[in-house]
Image (tube, rainbow, N blue to C red; front, side, top):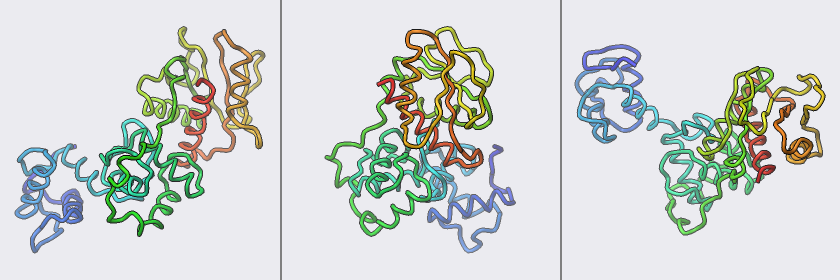
Length: 297
C-alpha cells in the first residue's frame, strides 16, 4: 500500500483515525475529520512507538496491519487454523477466555495456532457444539453467554493444567499425499485441507495439485475431491462417499486397504457442501483431515 503521511486527506485517513480512537488515542477536538495532521500525526507516532514500529508518523503497510489486528473484536470474523495464522486482538481475547474457563491453549499470544484450535474443540464439545475447532458465530455466542465467568478473570489461573492437545497427524509426516479437486467444491476443500495440514504440522507431506495435474512419482496416494455424484466410476479407482450412519474414517480405511502397497488415486465425494459458505467448506476440510489422520495413525 502507499504510505499515508502528514498532510494527506480522505477516507483512508478517516479509517486510520477511527481505529486510533477505538484504541484510546487522543485525536484532539477535531476528531475524525479525514485530515492527517496535528493530533492525528501524534497519535500515529504514539501507536507506532507502542507497537515497536519505529518513530515516524507515516502509516505504512506494517503500521496499517498492526492497526487492523489491534482493532479486531471477537466475532468480527470467523477464526480457524490456517496458514498464515490468524492473529490479532480477537484471537487474544478468545485465548484469554478459553484459558480462564479451563480450556488451556497456552500463552495468550494473539496467534491462532494448533493448540488454540485444540482448546476451541474442547470448549465446543463441552457446550454441545460440533467440535470442529472453528470459532464461528455459534461458538462465539456460546462463549459470550459465559462472559460473566471469564471476563476479568486471571487467564493464567489454569496455567498448570494440561494444554489442549493439538490434532495428532504423525501419519501425515510419514505418508506422502497429493490432493486436488475434480470440481469447484473439490478444489476449494482440497486447498483448505492442504493448508490445514501445513498449519497443524509444517512437516506434513501433503502437496496441493492443480485440477488435472499429474500425480508426482513419489506420491503414495492421490486424493481427488468432488461434490456428491460428480465423478465417473473408473475400474480400479476407489470412490469414498459419505453416507449417514457410516463414519468417513471407516470408508477411507477400506479404500486405502483395498489397494495397499501400490500407487493409487482415491476419489472422495464430499456430500452437500455450499460453495459460498466459508464455514461449511472449512468444516468439511477439518472433517477430512481428521479422518485422514485417524487412518494413517
